[in-house]
Image (tube, rainbow, N blue to C red; front, side, top):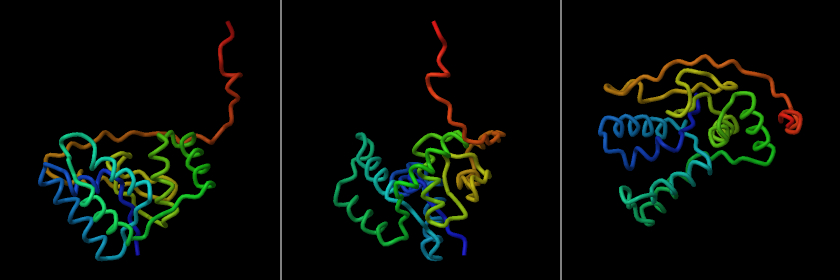
Amino acid sequence: MRRAFFDTNLLGYRLLEQDERKRSSVERLWESSIAAGTAVISTQVMSELAAILTRGPRTGVRWQVIHRELARLALLPVALLRPADLVSAAERCVRLQLPWYDALILQAAIVGGCDVLYSEDFQHGRTYDGVQVINPFLDVPGSPRPPVLRVRERPAVATPRAATRKKK
């Protein structure tokens, strides 16, 4: 059974997206993953979702609704990161050149035993340390296709900060 990790934005689109095609695309994917028992999230995703649901005048989601959604999410498999996982995420920042919060999402997908990461924040089709990224919006008519970038993975190298500064 392929386990699938859902990035925060996708869950936000389920509740807030104005574009019906995007919202229904995510809703179908989410519901089929729930029914199959393959959906995985993390505490980071839950926290970020609460933040985006309350941000700005456009959302205006009440805390009663957020509480209900978080209670539903808490029933799913939730990946919990330990201190060693944060160290692994920091290593991925260097090796894979990922932003910190993206590295945490990837680490949570790995900890959650996922083969797939549904996200629009990573390169579609690329496999990061055994987890394949799928952007579900690439199949939605009218959605732009991002360019395919070829990024070479570098081994992690510790470089003392003082040695990299230019001398005056």
